[in-house]
Image (cartoon, one colour):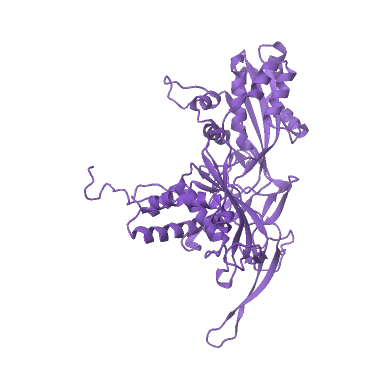
Length: 548
């Protein structure tokens, strides 16, 4: 594509930055298609498909999707709509302040780990009240496995040199969500259940000064395949430890733009996100004492059921009929290795189920029937519908940051049979084996958006359940003693969004030291929780006495 036909090309003056980033999925992801069309439909029974390039059928991350994720991250961090509009354009109607985007992006195509294929998984809808699967709520969906890489190409246009430092600062702030820090950017659907965690592993940047003849030709005298090949080579040669800001500063200094590089390095923007994160260490175990003590918990068994994988010869890798779920996880060296997981949807449903039981029992004890605890609970944990028939499902404001992987422990194979209740002997053909996971632990992080004291109090109570004698279990086999989890560490950190350091409360220490400051802080949250869950429901439009 030449300069005369370049739809992304800027005007004859200004500066253009070419940026390329390699994104690696840390957990499974489903980037869904808006609708199935030519080139996107495979001959299978899959219900939810990945978005694919209509020409070649390769899974892709659309430019509009990535731009929307960057805009959302920038707005959350800065609370500055003007800055987001300057970088990514404004959606206002023409003549009402509409602005074109200074940042152009291309669709990014997936490179699967090891040249493998897209996975087809079975999805289920778990009933939070019982922990079991809703009858008939099962579907198949395509999933990009952890370790999948996208190469995204971006171009930042600064028509006014005076705006260059500001636009670069805004881009760097938006791209922080692609670094391994905090909640950050998540790609695809079901991100609240731990899917779609992504990290930028390499950056490559190049500056073109279009006011200079050499810079003008270095940018325009290339077709698009040449630009993408050059960016790929630059990414391969890039330092994996270098971040975007370091690359921008080095390129600015190389072009003699020391003042702009200094402005970029000195720009300090306060993260305006009001949030909380609960960092847990969960063990597949059960306590020997009802109160946390110095004794180690006893290992338990866990089964997040999955079908055994097949080898290339069509033989199973294990003789078991059911195995504990293993998922590719990106390790420290960047390789995706299959590891046992603590679950995603099932784990989130466990937290939600414990929280629902706690607020229901507390509300009924304090005020009896007719309180608004269901609406309050759905506000934080998500819900199918509200009170009215035309209400939409409520999104969850408590989110599982990533699918936790288990370290330690070992697989245990058990054999079970069906006993005839009349004669007491085994039923022929009803013998099956299961490979469970025994012991091990996993770090778990829950993120909360715009928390208040009420939800912090609920999280403290959830930790109390998991750290003492939990009544709820995870996964299958609860009737035979499987699925016990014990929290041995729980730190709740709140970020006020004003630049101050986070305030941390050790919720396990609050249990072991009831007279300490952590316990006092946790107890101070509970009156607001009681007030929120015992308020009467808001009157509806058809209720008697409604002024409407």
